[in-house]
Length: 249
Image (cartoon, helix red, strand yellow):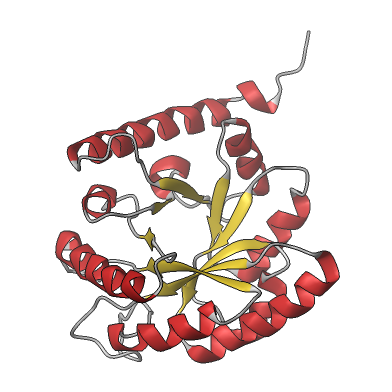
């Protein structure tokens, strides 16, 4: 009797079905938005889920995965060096974690202050000298919540729109970083469509100054359709593909 491999276990079948359903939603939303041949890049957010799920997703054709905690991401990346996947750091990032993140991340989606941009530039200069890796893609996280201040309870992170040009200049001025575009999370208790329209306006102002920074990282499981309508180029989808957070053992 042959042993069942990871390609045909029950979890892989579950992930394949969930992934197909999400791709169908993406294709439908892209067609409805008038961009049927231009779907966004899917980043599967694997936080809290085991490294073996990333291996299964890779076997199913996923090339980009997202994590929001450095220690968890670094551990998974170290376990999965044989896979052809790109790691996206999507969570709030402390400047003192920059050295660790640049060792595995293809992109950071949460650059929201000058101090962090400077730390990433410094860490990348060392890492590129050591390994010759490609520049780090950097998305400026923008706060779309007009009512909350940076330190308010419930604030989901991000630079104020007025601060985006200064951040962009610093990122674009580093040889070791690549200004990729903007990122945002729709505010709690807000209409996602209106929030993502504000992000699209920020993106338009950014690309007027930096034409190459066309990326818009927006849209999660609950609001991907609204994000696609507003021009999202990258989606960050977790629970609709991986299911609920595993119970602690």
